[in-house]
Length: 147
Image (cartoon, rainbow, N blue to C red; front, side, top):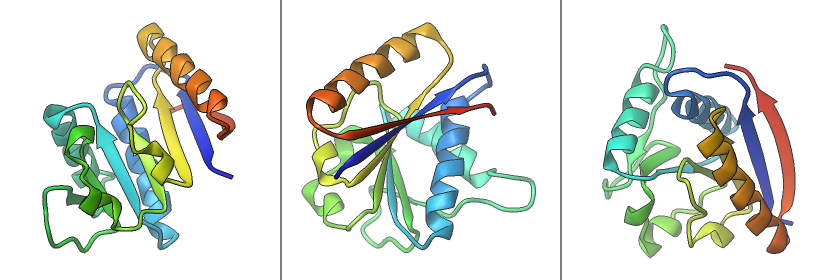
């Protein structure tokens, strides 16, 4: 059964969703799995890229941009509207969704991570996505995270 994990960030931190996405991507990568991380737009993808390059003081999180034809990293990032059929054929294990909507290709994934920040607008968008996933029969799990 396809599963969506909602990660509710309980505190307000700068770039919280990008930091949590990096943490989740790192966990996926350490498990020798592959993930696609999508953002609303190019500027958000750049913030995510910078966050992954400065993941912690001792290391970075290896990743490739979706626009790259030759990919070597297990984590690929980019704006949701740049995901093509060729990208989806790369056989990802998970989707980390940083957009405010559900990507049209969400059914392509067995596991989806939805990150919800602590502000009211993000919570409202998260509730709307939750209802849609529930209606579509996804298994849903909730996790509260403090950064």
